[in-house]
Length: 359
Image (cartoon, rainbow, N blue to C red):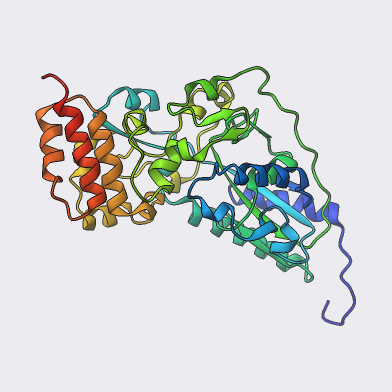
């Protein structure tokens, strides 16, 4: 208060208001947790010690701040976790695209506008509303942008349970959603975690093309197609290239096969609608984009972050896995002298694959 008198706050009423604001801002669920991530911290340290994070150096950086919210933002007492659906209502069936090797498969979360920008703006708006209501408020918003254990925090906040593929699952919304967080210094009432509902199901483990889910709840990122096509900046190991198929940005197989995604809801956000026909486009067409076209078409997209060189690397691998045709071979040949050694290496591999096939 301006006169120095501490503001009297009814935290139950404030929490109810935060939920209303969140829904008005387009979030489908909101939950609140404390900051105790001791159990998750032990699992994280073991995962890192085994080297299963590969080149995801940000997972090992920042010391214990990832699993200790109050060390990342001093004074943090609670974490508000929020969920927003992203599955486009108008997009070609994923299995159909995957079955047509000359088409490009892009993870469904990346078909529209970059979710970082969309969620960050909504989270900041929600934080501003809380700040206007509570003068003592101090907080910070996160959306996959800092050392935050978002799945574990969302689990503790009652938004779902951790599936065997390590993603958060909800009985009402499956896993086709983004998560965001607000660290706050307010002692809001916390929500209870949900029960797990995976049972004996192993579909996500069995479907993984590269066997990246090495055990329930344990992912070897070095084998994951999302890691290989997005996070890995250098050469894709030859052993994984044939297994990538036509997946040029990410992989959704473990989500596509999950029974709980039969209950998933499509997004109502225009920003997440398909852009530039990326849900159903030929590999040859995308491979022909020069850097200027790549930047122009994918500006504002999550895909933009990997850059044109990595984009061509990924498509070269997919073309190497496509059925041999004069069009495919010609497209690869045109890139055989590309200025990037990384691109040339993967084009050469693809051409060798086709040279060993008949017809």
